[in-house]
Image (cartoon, rainbow, N blue to C red; front, side, top):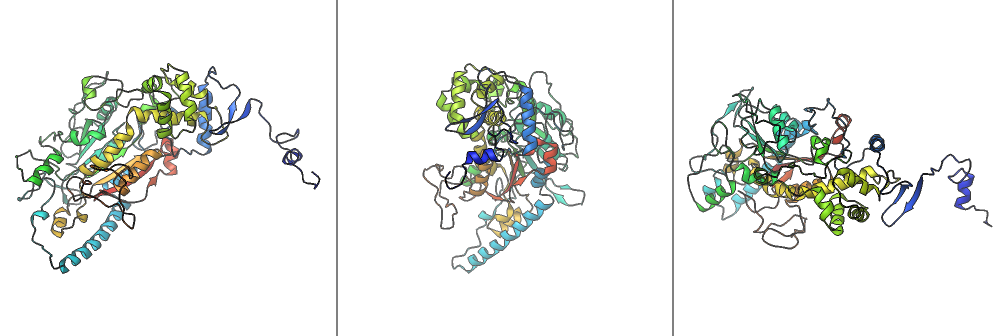
Amino acid sequence: KKNGCKSKKAKSLQHGGPGSVGGKKKKISSIVAVSDDEDDVLDSSESGADQALDLELLHEQYDLEESGNGDDDDDDDWGDGNELQSDSPFANDYHAPVMPTECIQALLLQGEWEEMLNAKKDRWRKKQSIIEAKRRKAPLHDDGNEEENKMEDGGDKNGGSGNKEVFQNEEGITRRPRVFIDGTLGGGGHSQAILEQLSAGDILISCDVDPEALATASKRLVEYLGTSDYILDYPVGYEKVMGQWEEGKPMFIPVQSNFRNLLSVLAKVRHPVTGNLLFGDRRKRQHHRENGINDGEDIVEFPYGANGMLLDLGVSSHQIDTGERGFAFMKDGPLDMRMSGSSNNSASLSYSASTLTAADICNEFDEGSIVSILRTYGDEPRAKRIASAIVASRPLYTTTDLVHAINSVTPTFARQRRAGLIATCARVFQALRIVVNEEDGALKEVLEEVAPAILCRSGSRHRSSKRQQDLENIHDGILAVLSYHSMEDKMAKRVIRDGKVDLFGSRRGGSGVLERDLYGNIIADDNDSYIGEESSLTPFEPLCKPRKATDEEIAVNSRARSATLRVAIRI
């Protein structure tokens, strides 16, 4: 140029840019730049529908991305098929639990978790004392309403029904038996960690929809197994495991059910020794108590509810590593993705087993529906192009067929982060899996309805001082949610913070935007209520900030890299 300034191209040539002969950067002839309306990536010149997929090359690319940054915060496990590390706590060839130490310490309120809860209770007591002092000064104060001070969930004038047996621990302190719920049994890693920390008389109920997981975990935990009568559908090749529980040990009860159905399922579960109902029908008991009905129902062992619930969301390691289940795109197998397995008998259907498969979605859904699925549940930027490729590649029967369809419009390698074939397949498979198993609807139900109803409430949050004294010895209800991608974590966060997933959706019994006060708190109405408490939209209070897996655990178990643990207390 006349003013002496050189153009960008001239500067690039002078300093050895990609266009110069002696430049340090070399241009790879097999890769060309491609720009479109969705992203700007590097596409392979050999990419196409007829391209032969090299799985070894994909494994090498996966290893490169793992060693590079490992940023898989929003996607579920990639299904790489790597063998589980034996150094992981409570891991075996079937399953490696994620963050077991943090989960168990939170459920049992050990270590720092106990200190955080005690500090929170101190704040509650100070606030409660101020409220009661103001009530005493009120001219219409009445402290003689004894019926409101009765113990909840099964209590009567004579002290209430329930488990009156107490046990002594090693320190000689007497306490009531406790009951915990593992909503996602999987390989039994978390359940084993919980059982090893429980005392005599305590009970752990673990549920899962996968009959193979239930049979494997029952065999693994046979020394704690009280009964296997609640496993409805044993898979082929598995024999019914007989319990070997002995007095002086905690008891393990596996239940075949989706955690969204736990309220109705647990209402029928009985103690293997006493024969009493563990929880009973809490909704029916609440209705009878409100209307003064006494029908002489059975004795309930735990009328106050469960002491803790653990939800380890997502897919288990065994399901990823088993190609026949169709979860992993690194392994060839049928496009199934049902967590309940391929059984379609009457016993399987009784606990809401899914009949929809990933192949049904790919072969029968229209292109617009597939685009919506990929965008909603996978945050996939190429949703439209991938949906068109899936429709054009029909019929699809195996995971390899689906990967070929994705690869026809997706580069094997990409300049942008998380835009290559590996990450794209992970998002697509994740979206299909969520729809097949209705994971979003099930998670919403268990967080909004099941957990608030089944967990016992903290005695330190009740208004009446007498009621608080009655419930001081009742353990607090702890909810621990372990999520692996943004959709699950957001749902858990909203329920713990606001009590509902859809803050701007319809209320129960009404519709419209939820009303908030000047400080942003949700204002409850008559339609927002939970079992056994006053009208409230916030049944939980967070116990701490969300936790992530440590670097040491990620080095041993790479699938823990995207895990987020949220812990809340039932109030």
